Length: 191
Image 1 (tube, rainbow, N blue to C red):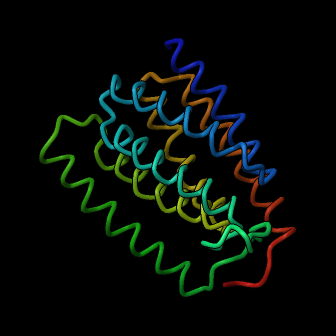
Image 2 (cartoon, rainbow, N blue to C red):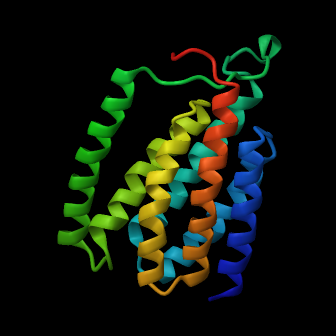
């Protein structure tokens, strides 16, 4: 356990708490947290997770921009972005795309790198990107995605001796349930 893992863990909990509250400050906190975790995961040879942090950085910037403008490109007409849900077709589509991309990425990491857990790492990468995109779009199903990711991540990080990070993802698992409940209360009809 390094000081960076400790700082990243603390910022992760703060950032998710702010997301549950739909607080715009969750995005800049997230930017710092993913920057720190890129370094932590690289050191653990979890390359997909390292790449994921860079992609998260871009999605954090997008989410911050999207939420700040209420989902419109015109900041003059911006209001608070409402929480909405996905259609049944969109839910199935995201699962199918996620499974296909996980298989392809896992195979590539297995064949081309010395990645420690290429298939599980790929799952975390792909489904985290899906969940992060849905969160940036303020879709309540993002929390179901985070539940899936966090379930796998707890085990992966424990096996890689990232015990504090494993504990963080266990906290994230519970926070995902909390986020689902909170966002569902204010959810508008399926988009």
